[in-house]
Image 1 (cartoon, rainbow, N blue to C red):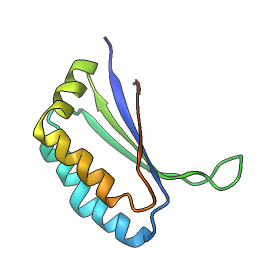
Image 2 (tube, rainbow, N blue to C red; image 1 turned 180 degrees about the vertical axis):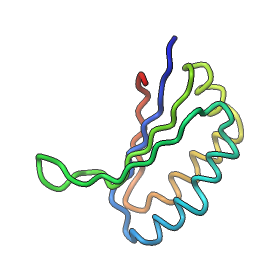
Image 3 (cartoon, rainbow, N blue to C red; image 1 turned 60 degrees about the vertical axis):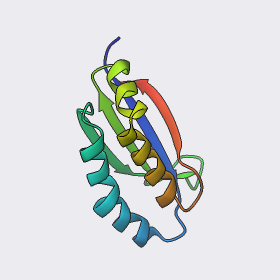
Length: 102
């Protein structure tokens, strides 16, 4: 299979400044340390939606060369740590995770 990505959609946090701090200082380094198969981490702040206020605050793409590489990263302890931390810092509700082609 060709390149894939995990897309993580974070809802609006209860405290945006704290979310941004924890995301930059804790979560990004955690991803870089614990997801060795990841080839790119792309972080985007959602600016708007044609339908009004967007449901999501931040969209993150974790790129992988293959589904096997993505699954290998998230099957281990490192992937579990990253997932647990993502849920912990997502104070506006659970993040939505999608697996897509790259």
